[in-house]
Length: 122
Image (cartoon, rainbow, N blue to C red; front, side, top):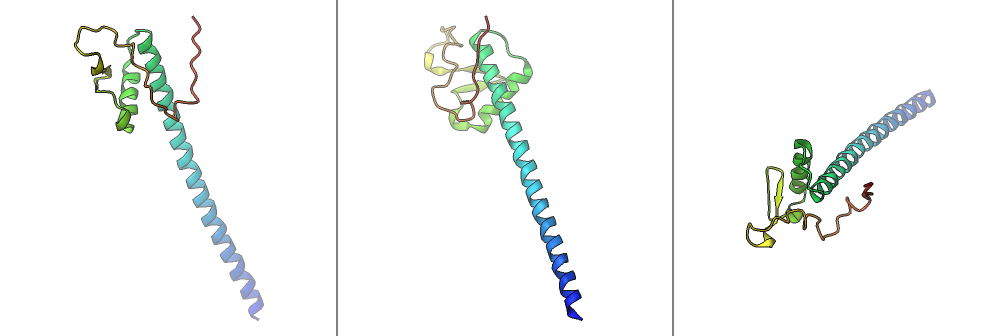
């Protein structure tokens, strides 16, 4: 009499447990995928902005805002002044130095930028 009820309850608990595992796993997968896509896209945009600055090319608004977003996410790596998408380092001293693009690359290691290689095809 109770054996049929026992099997039905076991199957119900199994279905609920599998549904919870699938929801949790799927949600975790989606969150991680979006996080990695967002950080990878931002790292690529930041690296492109660095390369354009090194070559003396004006940044499009999208790359300037990506550069600001990169520094907003990393306040310890922020240069002396970042304003309106323009990076100016104060370590040159006076405003007489026009070598703004000379010191653009950060000397610190950033793991998110490590897998990004730039191959200049001149």
